[in-house]
Image (cartoon, rainbow, N blue to C red; front, side):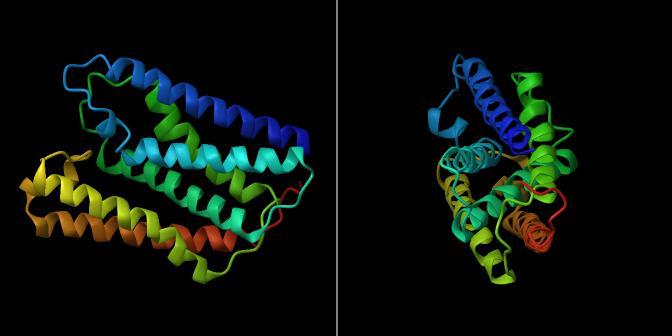
Length: 202
């Protein structure tokens, strides 16, 4: 079972790298391409974070070491972020027309990885039991990301997603941000709860 789990995680890491690279090869040829904008998307960053989390578990597995609380918190946070990517994309962004999007890459980053990461966290037992105070750590990165994006929207005008556009009015943007924050907290509660389960022993 351990070999199967590690193989799936390795495939997930490779899939994320391939998907990001595939989209980057297309986006980097556009006239309006900006390196920091491409990697400023929550989608890209959350997929990188979850890939790093899986890679860290693979390193520990190779060293035959048990996963500590620190890495489990990081994995739990990564699961929350990638699940948020999947939820936001499939609820708020399905109608957004992005003609330069690479379809297979888009599917991996927005659909396949969110689903796999949640199932990985739910099913496999090689993570420490988390407590609800760890949710505060889950909120740190999204809060910093949102602040940076709002500052950029107010200064150079770049925002990665339409619902964060200051032209909507900061009241509307604030409501969207609160909604996403509430979703992250709820997902955090679920992730902490799932950390107590031991469905498949690894």
